[in-house]
Amino acid sequence: MTDKERDLPQQYLSDELHLTELVNVLWINKLFLVAWTSLFILISIIYSLTLTNIYTAETTLAPSASSDMGSNLSQYVGLASLAGISLPGSSSGMSDKDLALSLLKSKGLLQRLIDKHNILPDLIAVEDWNLTSNSVSYNSDIYDTNKKAWVRNVNPPFQVIPSTQEAYKFFDKAVSVSEDIKTGVISLKVKHLSPEIAYQWSLLIIQEVNEYVADMRIKEAQLSIDYLNDQIRITPYPELRALFYELIQQNTQIMMLAKVRPEYAVTTLDKPLIPEEKSAPNRSLIVILSALLSGMIGTLMILIRFYLYKLDEPIQLNISHFR
Image (cartoon, rainbow, N blue to C red; front, side, top):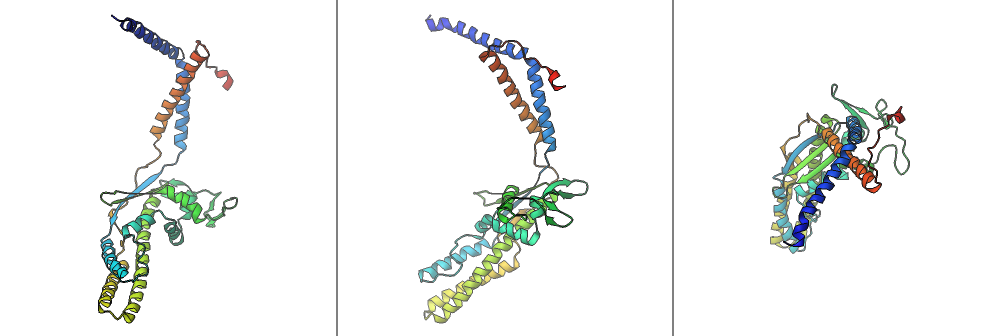
């Protein structure tokens, strides 16, 4: 038997003694540990109850069939570029789906929502939502509902009426967008204190994005058609004129679809619903994490006191200081 093998029982005995000592230290301070943890649990419960419920409306979107029109047109645009013809509005190279995806959380979309639907008070000034009346209340220090005017007191460069740049910080937190790379399916989530507003915003965002892309494609197509008609008049080559007529036909079809199809860029696969249950805060999780964290901190305080300062008497709970 080697010396190392002879030392093994002694090593195990030493480890057992250390573990027993550790348990004893914690046991004699059990009242402090329970009181310390209970205090933090109570604080976390009170804190979690002060948090306002957040509701999330979820929508699933997919690229519309009109995106195929853009890909077909790009083939003709490539042929035109080989002939030295560059069509106006054809340089972006983005599909309708990619364009819609980039617009879903853009400042341009937010500005349209503010200008057309006046979402600014509901975005920044809402303070609470009443379940019984299904109505929201606003912070009176920020927005006067009677006068429908902003009354907040801010320092420059901020203005009394929030700018789009300032509002975007709130919009970015309220709206989240993700895409499944394999399927191309887009997930849109809108959070708000009011489930009704979260639902309405989801509908407005989808509507405005589709209109935004459609308007952009209509303007691009009209510019291209005007330009191609000019080129037909001055081009002596029949092959190029035939190509230009084909391009005009493609652009005309895009304009027609953009004008008659409400969901031009993205199609709703799963429509949003008014959420019935809150998505945040998770009050149980807050309390559990608070209990675990306070227990760890309390244990660490006990061990530091015992091993670092060599104090082996239990921590006294003196409540006379709180009277």
